[in-house]
Structures are given as C-alpha cells and as structure tokens.
Length: 175
Image 1: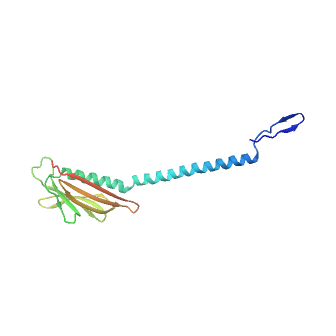
Image 2: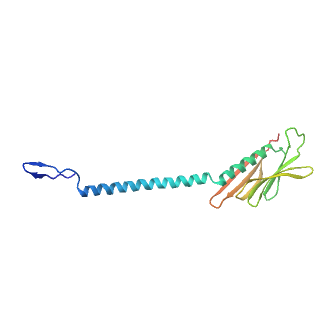
Image 3: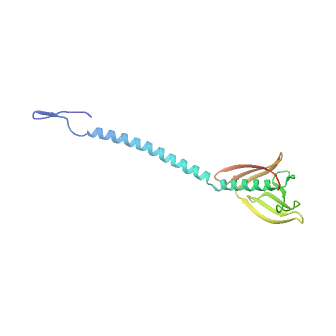
C-alpha cells in the first residue's frame, strides 16, 4: 500500500484504506484464480461422470454375467471333449442332470443369436431342448475354442458408445 501524507494542521498521517487501482488489481487476481480453480473442478467432475458411465454401463454387467455363466457351466460339465463347430460360433458340453446321475444325460450349448448370447439346456437321449436362456445382449462377436484342457470364450460387446472384449475360460471338471 502506497502511503501519502496529508497535511492537516500540524499532524501528518497516512490515509486509511486502499486505492481504487489496488482494489481492481486484487479483484482481477482473485477472478483469475477463481476461474482456474473452477475449470479444474468442472474438468474433474466431467471425467468422474464419464468413468462412472463407463463402469456402470449395461455392457459391463453383461460381460460379468456372460463370464460368470460360461465359467459355471464349463466347470460343471463332464471332463469329456466339448463339441465345437469349425468356425467357433458355438460350443456344446455334456453334463449330468443331478449329482446322483450315473451317466451323462444333459447338454449345454452356448451360441449367439440376433446379438444375444444364448445358453441352451437340453436332454441328450432323446435329443430335446429343455430351456433356452438369454445370458446377455449387445454381442457383436463371439468365438469359442478348445485350449488345452479348457474351453475359452472370446466375447465382444458393443452398445454403440463403447466396445468391451471379454475373454473367459474354464476347465471342465465334471461332478
């Protein structure tokens, strides 16, 4: 603060307060600092909203559901070889109807139909479908392959905003 002395009779004293120029400079500095902090806060919020949307999108939960279902079915399948078509578009494994079953009498098949991953459950002899379940939607590509003792599913999910690739594999243990 610049001091000036004002002659008032015999005493000289400094004026009280700030000059208009000092107030304007302080206001401009505070406005610039406030804008900079505001930009950082807004940018952080936009980034947080984007990550929240990506993590809680339908294709993320679809990917978890597909992976969980596939691994569960493959682990409970008999340890025989799975049936795979040459292009890997579907896989079929045999399983027991119950833990008390003496022979393998059921099958599970995974395939894609109209953008949905389908799990089909059926009886081997006579061949009949018992139930069909839609595991997940938004499927743009799905391939199955036999890798060592495991069966692997490579699933590509696309909801138009983001694309997720889910790779899941499991060893067939049987009951």
